[in-house]
Length: 181
Image (cartoon, rainbow, N blue to C red; front, side):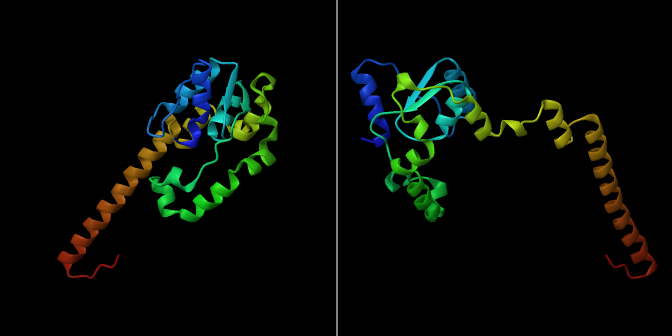
């Protein structure tokens, strides 16, 4: 059995309900996970992963508890990214051992009842200070009226220049003059 499922066995043994919140191929996974995390006060896991940050950012009291599930190369045998980047996998595996995770995130290694909110940490880690408003994002991507006018003019004049060059080549070829460019 996969090491990540050891905690599931413990939950089932004590009739503690549990759910799977995400799948890498699910385009709504982050939205679903946010809703799930915001529905609970606590989130306990037996390994490190993005779920720790997402749960903390959603206000959960996060703990890493139980037999720590370390990843191995076998866990990523069919991973398309790691299959072409084996050195990155090796580095990531070295950095995700229980010892390394305890060095960086020891505050999460507590009994679930002793877990506390880490909202400030989560906001810092997720980069909330760089968050843009919808209006800022529209400005950055040129989705506002000014940006749309700019893009329309840019593409219009680009096309006009291409047409003009072709027309000039034809005129010059009829007159017997050479045209470069």
